[in-house]
Length: 240
Image (cartoon, rainbow, N blue to C red; front, side):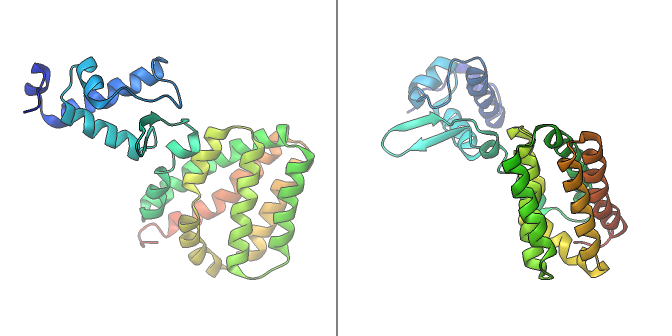
């Protein structure tokens, strides 16, 4: 029978597992475990932290799902590279599954982040990055196909977020701007005859980037997402 430290017998299992999760996270945060480093064996780590092996196993499984740890077959458990995009990947599930007022909340978050990203991009964008933004804008203007416009809309905003030079912000934006989420909103929004308007709004963002004007870029991006947010807010009682 597996030995269970006294501390694990005096608290609910969920509490002990959560404590194990927090202890491993603290070891990473304190630099005791570095990105790419192999964890001690489950037995050794459980003994080191004074936690039962079953709770340690659950903690490792939970952190693996979150992208903090990764299991390498035949090799052991390792700390991942802790890239923002990997750690925030599960956030996109929230956007994909949310409905009604929760969608409005996500649009509000996106408006705040998108406008900040656009302002940073206006100050930092390179000629090569600007050319990518221009290419997606031109492609949006050259078609009336909703799927093509959606694809280039996503790519346009992704390019702006990348040009902002903040990987964490770009990862969060990717989560709240998933294709599934935006397609659901777009299906309703396009019924309002928004093709021309969305092209104008993207063009305004591009002009601000071209002019290297952070405040104009911030305002243009906020207005663009705000239009969709206002429309969705009016539809909040109807599941989208």
